[in-house]
Image (cartoon, rainbow, N blue to C red):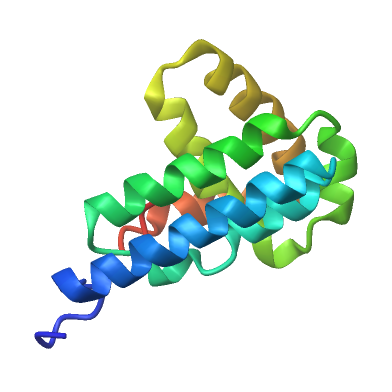
Length: 135
């Protein structure tokens, strides 16, 4: 791995892209089964393995975005979501807000508000101070 943590070699990046494609198919299946919370959990799993390569980050963002946009019951989603996912979700919400896309921003703001109520301001602060694992 060339000695740098987070550096993704080309071969490894291709393997990660393949895993993301597999994850995408699994998420689509869950969404067709009307299981958006399970789809979101699946999308958020393994996020920290995807650092250093912009192609991997972008591909993974598309998968997470699909799951985020499928959420209709935000309160129910947060009730079902394990606290270990809160910080990861917050990172993707900020990524969604950065797109400037109106529907994406609306959904991200809605989830952001409810997530902040549930997880507290620490979730935002951890996102703002985490420069290593940006999504």
